[in-house]
Length: 193
Image (cartoon, rainbow, N blue to C red; front, side):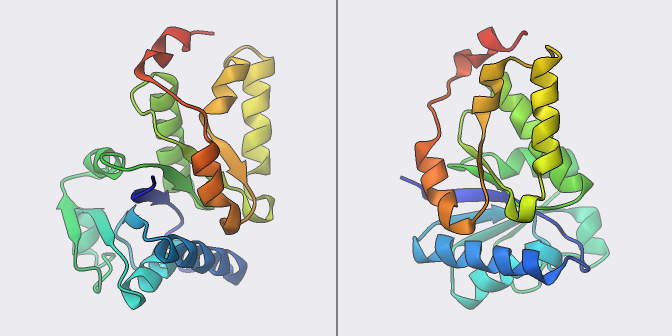
């Protein structure tokens, strides 16, 4: 059962409309399936799109945002459940506590950094929930190719690629979460290449 998911995504106000449409579609699907949301607390970009939809439809949403971002007015003013933390490290930790899955939408270096950390934690058995990469419009194609390079050059094992699922449409995200292979804390035994 999926009760709550964490979403990593862009906070850029210049994000192309096609990605915003994907964010709205995903938010609609999650809300229609009574799935709550943990996200970075922002008001612009894909973060803003998803939060706007959750607020509009009275979905269960919690934002986790560092204090310095609140000071520069990046926090979403309509998200009532907004947790203000001390720094980015605490934000990332809180975003993966008590979640049933992580979904990565297109984004910049912040999104990529969050995704890399949770993938590393999964490889080490410190995060065992499903991770889904929403590869809309081939956004993550080069990153996924790079993961394969890591395998071919013996920096990762082939089974490390099972730590995540890749889909190209919001409509496939829930099934990808449900189809994700079981993972456990013993994964650390297989972490070395």
